[in-house]
Image 1: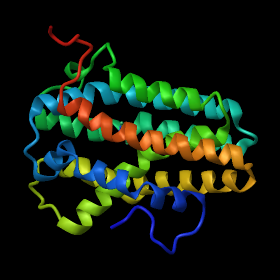
Image 2: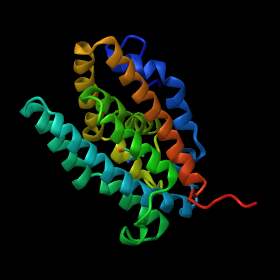
Image 3: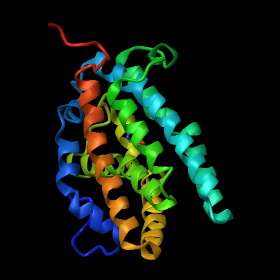
Length: 232
Ligand SMILES: Cc1ncc(CO)c(N)n1
């Protein structure tokens, strides 16, 4: 299952095809493989939850940047609804992970970003000082990689009802969450149609970089990354 079929048209379909290798690397990363077979170490899961809570807060701030650049109320509605989705609904998958790890959501919180999470956030924020199109391009891999991976896993492997992380997978596979990706792709496709070649190139770069950041985010949690200097 690829992120964009060869027959799909539009700017984001091109991005999906151009970055198919990164989507696969995202799917194959040992962190996500451990989420699939339910063997992922609890400390890695908790590292992820602490960082991801902060990451999603930054993502909401990026919607605030988008709100400030919104040309009309249709766009404002989009950022408003999307921020509400993260605030109200996307805490659910974090709770699933905390239950798996046997910890409360409160206890999973951290007050310091790890280098990789910080880098991803800085990348998104910088995109928000370029243009609405570049911002959306930097924001799209976040929902797209997760909803694509969840759809693929649930469709191909049909996890059993007693899978310990089923609630996490189902959240990202559900129609509502798939709709987040769909909506964002449609908005970015329409912006790309009106953008010049230079801006489209910056959009493509911002998208690709975010795909890399997504893979690195798994690696951050997998390696329990901190700011500690190497020995020696
Ligand atoms: C780092 C990261 N990427 C994507 C998602 C999906 O929203 C998430 N929660 N965290």
